[in-house]
Length: 245
Image (tube, rainbow, N blue to C red):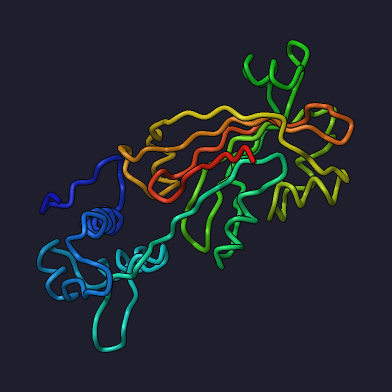
């Protein structure tokens, strides 16, 4: 880490420190069950104050990588936050998070009514120029940013959608409550990607962190295509599984 704390893509200093320590723990420089260097040692190493350092350690504790012992310091846990998301017609990432004993949370960071790109319009079988709602949703496991979703919903299927998003907590909860819809996945495509600078800030990661991108089309009970979502998951926290039996 540069001692003047110049930042890559405006990533905060505490996040840089957390990333460095995360990498060192993954490389087994600090094995499970052992104590990491003291706060005083780490403050000297990174040339930061204790407040900044504790912010870094809080991030590592949130993902289950370390744990604090009163008066003894921080110790490496056996297993950090590691989410395996089985992609099925009905499985939701929130269900997976709950099974791990974590609390799922969703934050709506942008909404608009717009003409979708051609690939989205084709996937949803929309007419040229047909409008759809575009929602950007940041998903968390506890307070750890996990994924960034861009969702498109046809305006004619979900009239006045934006009037229902003021108290947004869950996309599917909203669709079930306001439109009585229960959606199923038709299909998904998978790829790897790197985050944009803005995505890296939202997900609290370095721009060099790999993302797992899943583009999915969902249908309603009448087999009508009603949702297209491009979800970008943090590759350092998530893995995707597909089961054929």
